[in-house]
Amino acid sequence: MKPGIHPAYGPVVFRDKAAGFAFLTRSTATSDATVEWEDGHTYPVIDVEISSRSHPFYTGQTRVLDTAGRVERFERRYGRRDDRRDAR
Image 1 (cartoon, helix red, strand yellow):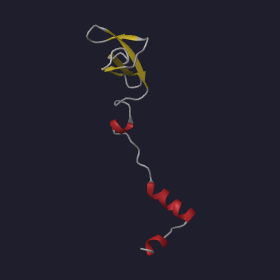
Image 2 (spheres, one colour):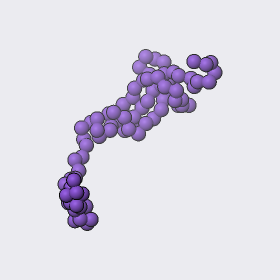
Image 3 (cartoon, one colour):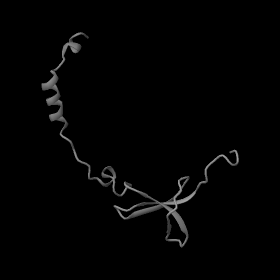
Image 4 (tube, helix red, strand yellow):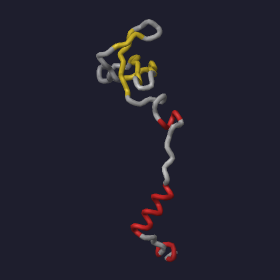
C-alpha cells in the first residue's frame, strides 16, 4: 500500500442505543465521541440505529405479508394475460 493515501484504520465501538448493544471492531470510520470499553481503554464510538440485536430479520420478529391478496388485487385491476403462455 502507498503511504499517506489511505485513511487510518483502527478500533471503533459501534453502539446500538435502542437495543443496549455495543461491539468493538476495526474501521476507518471516526468520531469525536468516545467511550471507555470493558478492557479499560477509550475508543471512538459511533451510534447506529439498527444492529443485529435490533433488526427484525435477525431477531426473528419479521412480519409475514399477505402476498396472495396482493397478487389477486393486481390481477383484478390489470387482468390476467394468458396470451403469452398460449404463444409458446
